[in-house]
Length: 247
Image: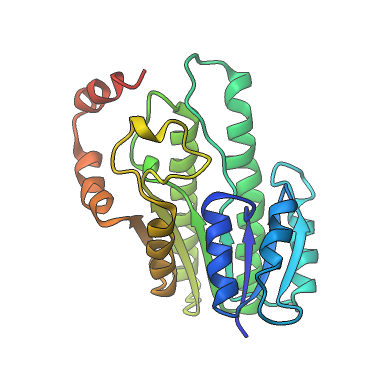
């Protein structure tokens, strides 16, 4: 039986992905700050002892130790570590206090947990580390400076880990950067004001396909993937003019 550990499984894409892995019959470790949704997911288990739950807040310094404890409860090995925990919001004004929670979650907490997962895979010699970053990693976003910056950080960090895997010739380890566009989840405020908003289920199927194929980078879905290279080479003045409407 394959084993997946999902951090950030209490809502949105993490919750939906957990449902699919449970239906596939995987052994599933579920972790999040809120445990009530995890208990609901546990009721979907098809097999005895299929689900193991843990209350973990990525912003707390003990998160890696708690992940290690969860891993041992799962049997000490993991085939897939899936990091779905993250926050972000639009900010009308630039204040450090408002941006700090995003930085604590998407940079400090994220890095601590990703480092732990990377070292676990290196220790066991195989497995896949997949993290949901964002299409926002491609450019700065005036309406959400901290969110876009943290997603760029995540994308570059995962690329750096991938380079290390190649340098060490760890052929059985995969680092997957999942970059969805707008997805209709609780994280997305006012989806009616945005374009190309993906239903959660459609996004999840695309994410699962990318994970199964062990992609290095997967922009979700095709239309966002086609837009990404154009956005990266677009003049700064043009991007600024487009985003000005969202301020």
